[in-house]
Image (cartoon, rainbow over all chains, first blue to last red; front, side):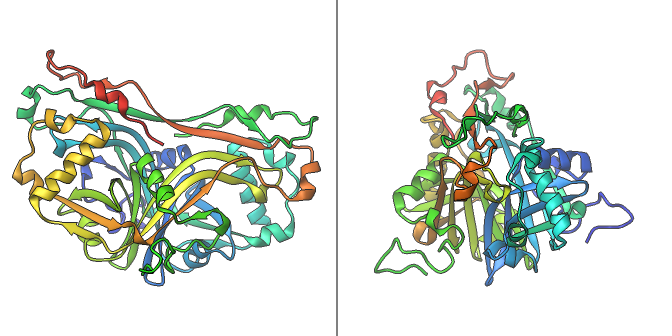
Length: 220
Length: 220
């Protein structure tokens, strides 16, 4: 559990052990990573086995949210048990002078806890609007309106960011001092995510306009 | 467990339940996804809690491999218990006419099982060479040679692909029949990973050459 006296102190499970000098626990670092990467990998225990399901997350204030089919394995299982929600962004391959010092430039966040289910239909609707509009601002109002059956069939879970940690690495390789004299190329292969030109559905009505806010979306 | 009579039949835990029409179990589909995306999210149970750690995986034949610090939490824990190794590639956001039909274009693989530790130093060395050369062909021979201490400090785990499933979605939105008459833009925002120009370490010796094989690396 997090320490109420020091909300940014890591809990036992959120404390980073390996490469702890790369760890960050401040809220600004954690929320910046969550906001840059909607894909999360949610880990949970199903029939005694770990399962990792990719899904989309979004953040509001000090909570992270995700949704899914109300009758699906992930939503059913994670609504009643601890999860680990991990978001990671790969920024580059770090090619060192020694294989042992190969590394990744990355930004990642792990959030631990037992999710809360959002059950109030109005609150669910408000959160789904936020989810949709986080990709294309204003799109919710343009869509075919949501039905109460659709709201009922959608489960929304959330976790507070009270047990969260971030890990970041950037920059060139870090080799052993004596290895800098070894004559091999070292450096970084940078990796980026990008959004391409929108691909309209061939079944769009001739009258529809491409939303200007489509170009607002970025990732990574 | 997998069925020895039908090695491509899903086990109970690798069978895809949600959107099962997107599921694939054939070896070619699974290996193509693993080969396109080195980042994996490994889920395991540590002190009763699920943990999801991003790491790099590589494949050889019918097995997937990953490595880490021999004394680290992930390698210590996963060497003795079931894991779920998930690899996912985000290909696009699918903006439907109804929020309920929003979706992702993606390719993902889940591999279940109890990992085998590779303990023979020669086999570990051979596998690490394969790992390094999967990014930059021929790089292993150019590097400062690996030491036996480094091999000992590196744990390598592997899983067979006998309990693996893939899930793929591509193409335009799939809306309810009656919603195609609703006047809103629908389509796909494609997302791509790309590798940028290599960034040489400022501490490279003036004499070193950039390996021509650096340009061979692609991702996604």
